[in-house]
Image (cartoon, rainbow, N blue to C red; front, side):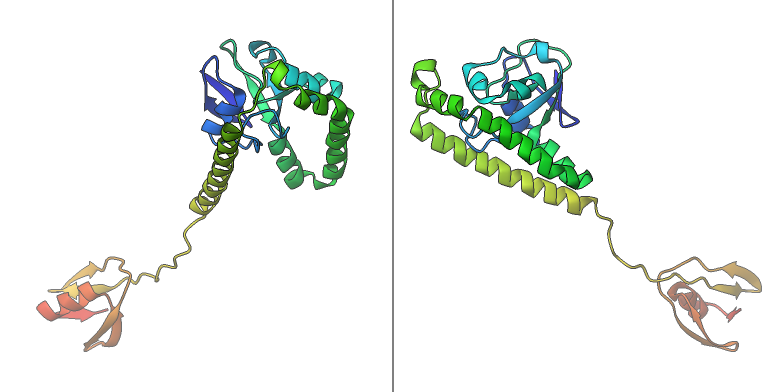
Length: 227
């Protein structure tokens, strides 16, 4: 099955986390903590198919404000695909990037709103992090380091892919030399010269004129008159 992330079709299957699907398809998504419910950067807005996703986890309930939840916001590291169907999501980092490019005057208000939503759940977030072990969200330090390193590597690769895509789409800037067309008479019959990228000088009774290398060779092999 496919799901839509930031207007791009991405391959997925039931049981997959939204974060894993986004990372596998190099979609623009935040995941600095490697998907361990620590950094709060993997927020996504579910545009379609919310009923096909897993219920909200304790981590999401602790970190997401009522306002964000009412807007369809989920944490991609905590959300899995439970049923096949049409699912469409927009990551918050992509939403912010589009706003910066298209309507930059809205960015301050957006940042203020997200900051307020985070502040509203600050105490709940701290309390959740303090009791992670009791709620089944244990973090292995070595695994955390590995996840963070992998996340940084994926982010770097995403930047490289974006740069390569941008340069690959740019038109080539080579300048072609104007072609020249020559016409000659061979044994009394007019022959049109083909367009060629270069020309050379032909000394004949008609004077020194520019002709193609092919015409010059023809001149040398036959009795010709340049027009």
